[in-house]
Image (cartoon, rainbow, N blue to C red):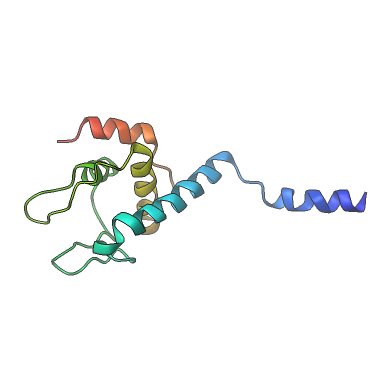
Length: 122
C-alpha cells in the first residue's frame, strides 16, 4: 500500500490542464523555431541589431500581421525574407512564444487564427 501511494504522489503534483500543456508545448516549439529562423538577425533577446534588424521586444504588430510577415516577408525598407516553408502550426507556435517572451501574454495563438490571417494578408 505504501508503494502504491508513492506512485500517485507525483501524479497529483504534476497535473496540468490540457490548455496549460498545449501552451507550454507551443512555447517550447516556438522557441526552437525562433532560434532556427529568427535569432540570427533579431538576436536571442529580440533586441535586433540597431538599424539593420529591428528589435522585436516591444513590437506593436498584431498576431495576424506577424503571421503574414513570417510567411510572406517584407520588401523595401526593413527587408525581411519570406519563409514559405513555415506551416500554420509553426507560425502559431512562433507567435505564441514571442507573445509570451516579449508581450507577457501566456496565451496560445491558435492554428485556425493563423490560417485565417494568412488568407487575409495584404
